[in-house]
Amino acid sequence: MIDYSSFTKLSYGLYIIATEHDGEKAGYAGNTGFQVTAQPETIAVSCNKDNYTTEFIQKSKKFSLSVLQKDLDVAIVGDFGFKSGHDIDKFKHYDYKSGELGIPIVTESCVAAFECMVFSEVDCGTHILFIGKVVSAEKLSDNDPLTYAYYHEHYKMRSPKNAPTYIPPEKLEEENDDESKHNREHDKKSEQTTGAPPSDYVCIICGYTYDPEVGEPSMDIPPGTPFEDLPEDFLCPICNATKEFFKEV
Ligand code: FE
Image (cartoon, rainbow, N blue to C red; front, side):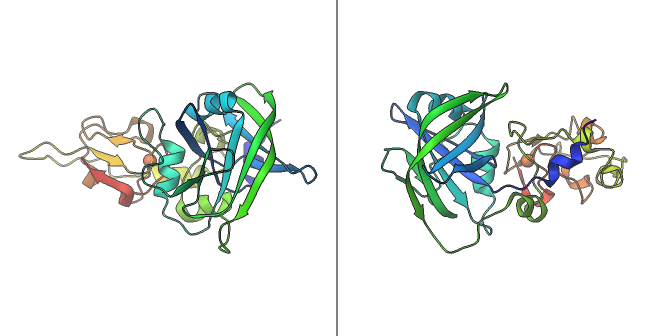
């Protein structure tokens, strides 16, 4: 028997993992980075095969791992964690530097950074575990590192679906039944609107768009519900961001 809520008790940090191949940078936010051995200094990261960054690491055989700090603007997690390098230049708005291996090291909102040379890859099905020898390590600040538990609790975000630790909400439903019900309670009455049709709203964290014409079937929000009429405890169905993180488009 597998009790999925057990997995939520595993503890992690949150990192920006980056690399560069043929002059093109790639990076993502992930929680599965850890030190494997002290001597030689070794760090491993688990990367989803669908991540743009993964094929870059396979080609470059290098990655950097930057440790995010506890207090930060969550936009950095949104851009690196919930958006694809296919769609945006993730490095455009954040401070980074080129490391000893010639790959980007994100320094913004980070307390430490490592560069690693990959010496082993383990195919884990959906993910590849890259094991790398640390070739540079630098403390960037004395701020506290972000833990994954604090990230979920304080910033109320879900894991991206590509994360090795992602648990589909329905698998946790039983454990969180009351909370789920509470989150999904809403006023199903949609007011008649006059004049211009209601606007779409986009989640600035993950890019999810709320279309009032469609509503949000997964949360029992019926078609025709304007964003303004969504319950105050409405959460982005992708990343769990609250309504304040939505912007009219
Ligand atoms: Fe979102």
